Amino acid sequence: MQDGESALIGRSTAVGRIRALIEKIKDLNAPVLITGESGTGKELIARAIHETGVRRAGRFVAVNCGAIPDQLLESELFGYARGAFTGAMRDKAGLIEDAHGGTFFLDEIGDLSFSLQAKLLRLIQEREVRRVGENHVRPVDVRFISATNKNLDREIEGGRFREDLYYRLRIVVIEIPPLRERKEDLLLLLEHFAERYGRELNKEQVGFTPRALEALSEYSWPGNVRELQNEVQRCLILCGDDRRVREEHLSEKINPRPEPDDGEGFSFSAAKAEFVRRFLNQALERCDFNKTRTAEEIGLSRQGLFKLLKKHKIDAVRGGLGRRAAP
Image 1 (spheres, rainbow, N blue to C red):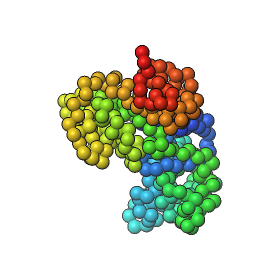
Image 2: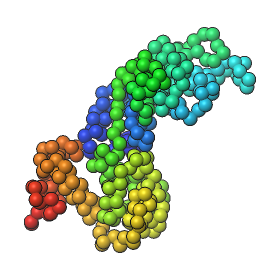
Image 3: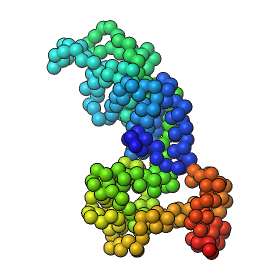
C-alpha cells in the first residue's frame, strides 16, 4: 500500500466520502483545498489525488509555506534569473515550473505572506510565472492543491488572508475529520502500521493485548494519524522479542500509570474480537440501540452490522449492553 492510500484506510462514513470525492476529482484540473488538524494526513490525501489521476505521470511537488523564510520562498516558488540578487549565479527554475505537467501542493497555505498571496492569485488566474529578476513570463501547466490547519474564514476576517485567493483555492474542499471523531477506523490503522513497521523491523505478526487496545481506543489522539503512526513504531521497538504490544509498552500520555500486562492469555485474533465487541457496544449505546443509525454512524450496511452482532454474539437491545447473547 502506497503512502497516499494509507490516508484512506477506514470504514467510517467520513473516509468513504473522501474516497468518493477523490474518485470524482482526480482527473480534473480544478484547485483543491484540504482542511484538517495537524497529523490528519492532508499531504497523503493530496498525493492520493495525484497518484490516481491523469497527472500521475508528472511530478508531485510539495512545499510547506511556513517552513521557508518569506524572503527565500518567492525565489523557491517562482525561480530567479542570473544576477537577480547576490548569490544568483545562474538562471534557476522554481518549484512551480518543476511541477509542470503534474501537481503542485502548497501545505499550510494559511502561513503564506500577503504579498506572495497576491502573486499566487495571479499565477492561478494566468497560468504563467515570472522568475525573480525577469521581465517575461513562462506558461505552466500545473494542478494546485493546497492545505491548511487554520480557519481561513477567520484569517480573512483578521486581514491575514486574501478573500479572492481563498475562493480561487476552494473550488473543491476536502475536510478531514480528526481521528477522535472516527474511532471506528482505529483498529484498521493499527493493523496497517503494525504490519508496515513490523516488516521494516523484521518483527512481523505483532499484535496488541486487549488492555493495550482499550487504552489506545480511549485516548483522544490530539496528534491524529501521525501520532498513532509514531506510537505504533515506538511500541514495536519497545516490545523487543515479544510478539504482543502490552499496556506497559505504550507512551505515558496514553497509559499514565503503566502496570505489567500479562496479556490475559489472548491471541491477537481474540484481542481484536474483544476490541470489536467493545466498539459495537459503545456505538449501539450512542445511537440508543437503533441499529440503522448505528450502522450509518460506523460506516456499515445494516446487514453488515447484523453479521457482526451475530458473529460476536452481542445482545443489541437496551439492557443487554456489554452482554454476549446466550448461545
